[in-house]
Length: 451
Image (cartoon, rainbow, N blue to C red; front, top):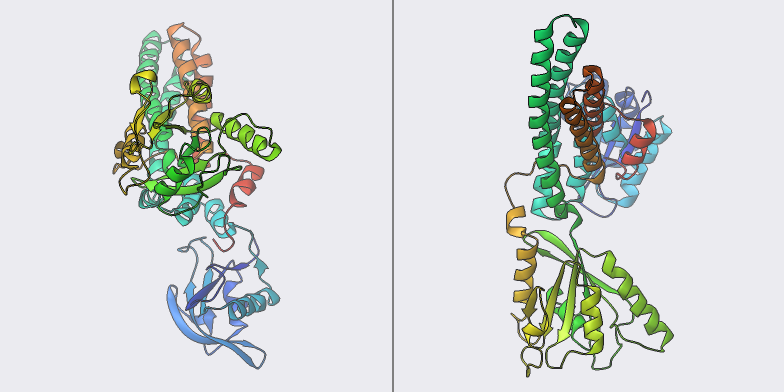
């Protein structure tokens, strides 16, 4: 944290502009040593200046240089950003000169890590920065920007303030045990506050779990026996020919993947090998892999050829998937129908074909209905956004529920306080008030270099 770091902050490649960023106490001094035409140590903060980057007598590039002085910067340290002409050679040379003058190459996410460690942003905001960079849909972007602005942080801090107020009442009760009326008031306040906090935290956890598919998408597998039209359905959903389609049974021997978006939510689709008994070693491996994916999927599309009667293999597939979130697709509805819906009980059933442009619309509509995608696309994007945050919220919830249970069992008030303090500390971990270095290093190592 005492040294000065540098990295290329834009994608490395051919482009109009690329940015090399420097942060640390020696940023101005180091940048000044490679710039001609301006003394960066004498300029005002948050200003941009024209100059030339030189390596001894050789001019490397004409640049614009942004100077931002501590503490009103991204990292709260002095920052210099050199706006070069885009190009691998030029940008790399500018970075090389900065490193030769004493800067250290930044680790992945180190600029954001410094912003966190210096107290400019908390841990949920740090995670949201990477979410914003990686967002592929408008919904993901809105969710990320909400957390960059600190909306989930404010919500967690509100929970913590309520618990801290509760702990202060308990401390008064412990310090002045001779006053009975204080104890009566304290126990009532504990119960009322815990009931309210548990209800609100449960709501946040449940809604966050429901909205988790905004980021992770719906893992969807297409399953069925050979030649029922699985690959054709995949191609129709993707609107291009990703999977090979032939009349030869067993054409698909390994998984084929593709992605589409429904209401802005990713649908991660896997077409699997046709399930049947086979002596072909390669095909057998594909069948085994298909069956293994059933337990991993968020949604299973069971494809049946409605032009044929139900086979024993169809029945076995229906049995294997009956407890899973699934849609039964009666495919090839443009042909003579030989399967009746009443033969398949208590399942989501739709009818499709891949010969018309609108043939798979009923499937898309059923998926939207099953996962309530219309409800997910709401204007309220204040949610916990990853497994770390969710697991800590659930842990805090358990502590609060244990505290409430103890109040109902007339447990000693100091025992109740232990559970409340555990919840307070766990909520603090969500926003990074309590952390260990190993966890922080692991979190930021997944960031891109230069951010």
